[in-house]
Amino acid sequence: MLTEKRQKEILKLLGEKGSVTVQELTEKLNASESTIRRDLTLLHQKGELVKVFGGAVQTESRINIREEKVALRKELKKEEKIRIARYAASLVEPDDFVYLDAGTTTEYMIPFLTEKSAVFVTNAVSHALQLTENGFRVILIGGELKAATEAIVGNEAYVNLQKYNFTKGFFGTNGVNRTSGFTTPDINEAMIKGCAMKHAQKPYVLCDSSKFLVSSPVSFGEFGDAMIITDRCPDESMYSDSNIIIVE
Image (cartoon, rainbow, N blue to C red; front, side, top):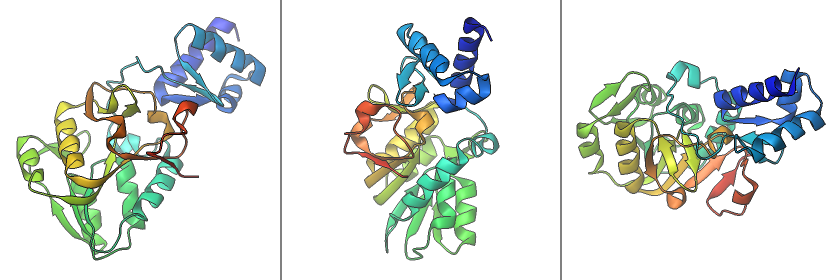
């Protein structure tokens, strides 16, 4: 494969996934590690991507406005999401009053939740149904249902949330970096996430590694506003950050 075509394929894969590894690229493009590393270095120098340990991620300047449907997003990085969700579920303690944000990773928490004295508030209809079926007490906030993400949003939901004070909150995100913080494509969802996060004593953002150094149009929290639970931190400079928990 010619160099130019190979590099276009690298950028295409990166655009689809948010992050790629050297091993993944060598297998998909049938190229040697040295060739792939050379391509990543050149693309990094051009500002097309950010080269990190073991692979590459999208540049912070790239804005992700796509919002895939829930059924598709559930299968992306599934193993990583499940590991993150299992750890997050272990943080729920007796008598916690928990906000569970709409999202695929937060949904994966539900089978691992065991503390029956905890009470859950959520803006996700599917989360509420599963929690109820599993014997938990659940409060579903009212408002407008957004079909693409199956989340309750809007002014009514925002007003409902303001009366609550959560011991813990677990949130999904479409992107995270130091500049724009936690981001999502939709202003209405951002309002709900931001409100719930401010009302949580201990907020956690569940974020697989593909979300790092990616920005969506609307911010709902600063980088330091929550603990981040992730499978891998692709930006080596973030390893020293005290608000990042890496789940092996």
